[in-house]
Length: 122
Image 1: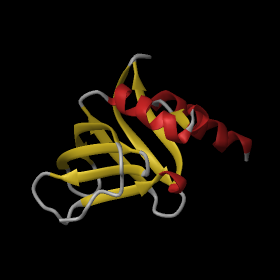
Image 2: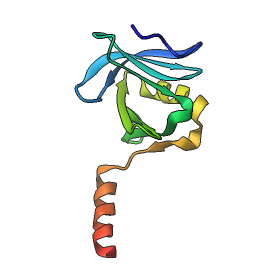
Image 3: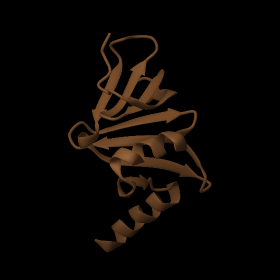
Image 4: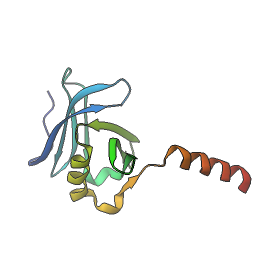
């Protein structure tokens, strides 16, 4: 089993990872980084140090409900997660990443509008 890179845990919560196949496990937000450990296999884990996080992208529905969020890293791409209380997870992440690095994802109609405007701008 892989050990935790954090020395202090701020938040631990049940969560779902959407990397490849859906995997159920635990999210740990701590002083050194963000971690996800699977319940079933010890080989299925994700550890992201805070200096590697570029943006945190939140999917917001009805201006209130956050079903899932993604962590965009500088080198490894985007990792998508869902938790029981995503707002609490994002508040814990905000302490280490900063409020300006947590952004709202584009809505369905916003991305359609952007695509149409890109067609006509060429």
